[in-house]
Image (cartoon, rainbow, N blue to C red; front, top):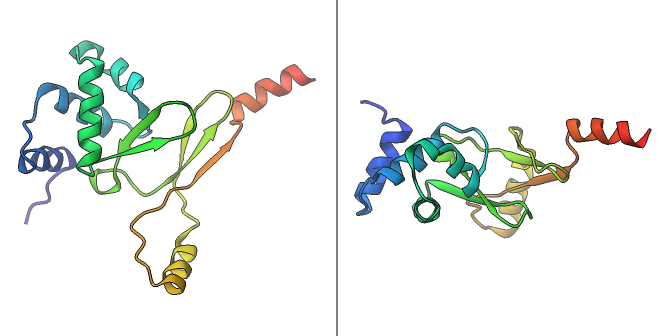
Length: 151
C-alpha cells in the first residue's frame, strides 16, 4: 500500500470536492507546504511574486483550503489572519509564541494540555476535536534590544 504525500492528498481532496487545481491554488498550497510557520496573506503574496498570483486569488484559495480542513486560520490579535497547514496535511500539533513587539511567531512543539483534555472529557462526557493555545510576550531579540535602550 502506498502512502500519498501531502501535496497529492491536497490536490486529490480539491478534486474530490469538485474544485479544479488551478495555478493559483497549487501555488498557495505549495507555499504553505514549504513553510513551517503561519503566514499572512501578504507573506504568502510576497513568496508568490514570481508566479504572479493576485491577492484576491490568495484570499479565495486560503478560504477554500480552510473550508476543506486543509489549512487552519489563526488570529493573533494583529488585525489580520495567518494560515498554516492543518495537522493532517503535514503540520504537526503545536502552539505558538507571539512577540508583542515585532510580531514574530514561533512554534511551540510541546503541548501541555493532554491531561487537561482528558479531565475535561471525563467531567463533561464531551468529545474534544481540537484546541489552541497562544503565548504572548517579548522575544529574545526584542528583549535584548529593549534592554540596551533601558540601561
